[in-house]
Image 1 (cartoon, rainbow, N blue to C red):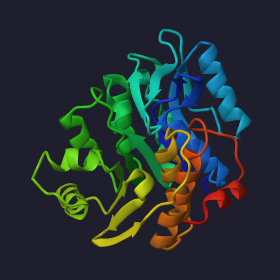
Image 2 (spheres, rainbow, N blue to C red; image 1 turned 90 degrees about the vertical axis):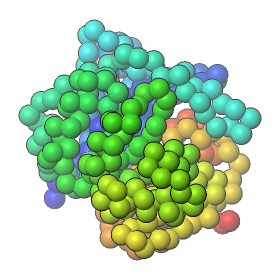
Image 3 (cartoon, rainbow, N blue to C red; image 1 turned 90 degrees about the horizontal axis):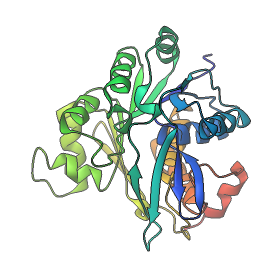
Image 4 (tube, rainbow, N blue to C red; image 1 turned 60 degrees about the horizontal axis):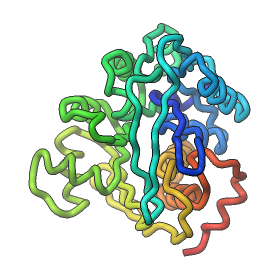
Length: 294
């Protein structure tokens, strides 16, 4: 069995909140939660040769996640995101650029790592800079199941890059704000199901899952549509909730669980993380029972 069945590519950073700095970055967040579920992920990223970079490496080590594929950069600082919360505890972001994770270099050991993994998780943010974008597309050529967590953050994406990424995925995770934006590039379709079908057909994507915040999620796998209404919880902040959702979904899919079970579990985990502060809170799987009931 492969020791790293899931590889996550992209940003490692600090979310600087009004209450202080918290570790984050979608790929690292996904890996953090995958490790909680026992899937032993690897992270391909790059941090600065600075105190914040050392702290992120220490966080991975503390949680049993390999740091072998996290590069260190003497020229660029560790990633920083200035995050603000609105009255609904939803975050908006000012993503500093350029930073270390914009310069992830291609090494042959990365191709071997990715080609041996069952899932390769990536997003649009890490494709904003030419260096990391070039590395990403080389790795996509050797990946098995490609999982795109689209994660659009204006102005850090272009239509051309998003289209290229959509052409390289078998599973697309998108939220209910990103879906109509991208679908609207091609047609004026109103319903979520039609928007998912449009992208599914245009880019030949077998599975699309759309997250809807507190209203759950909807999944289309080769035309079969299932939904989950979500769990009602007291939200502390939404940072990393979608990343934990994706980790939980991949965990269940990797165990060949039925789609409805996988979607329910992903919603439960995402809801629980929304009750916590930051993207990578300390928790045990037994804590998830706090959001078992509707």
